[in-house]
Image 1 (cartoon, rainbow, N blue to C red):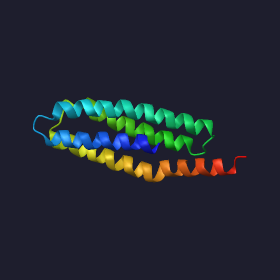
Image 2 (cartoon, rainbow, N blue to C red):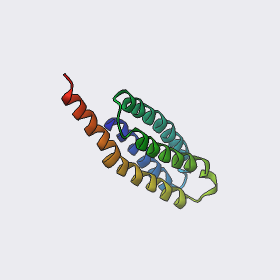
Image 3 (cartoon, one colour):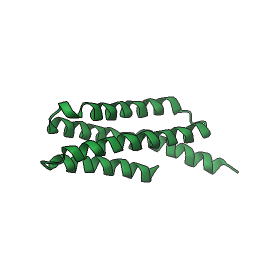
Image 4 (cartoon, helix red, strand yellow):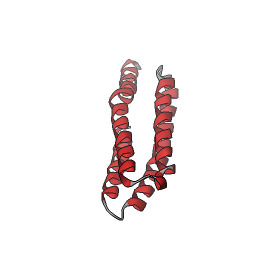
Length: 121
């Protein structure tokens, strides 16, 4: 999971960098779509892992994934109508949310899996 999280954060960093360039709006839009696609696959794999191991926090965790995917979809759909500053602030909020999700919700999942493995024969 950690490697996939680094990819997500790297794409957000690339979005910020693209938006800082005068001609970077198009590149940032492509990166945002890539982030959405990647996040959908990443979250699906996490959700499969949670189901396989009967993770008790599954529903709440999935709700957080759905929230982020909604934010990413909104960012990609509303891209054209917003100025660069609005888009960059939206990407920053998504980044903050993702970091908080990793530190809390994903960390709880990782701890559960470690404890489950430690108790396995």
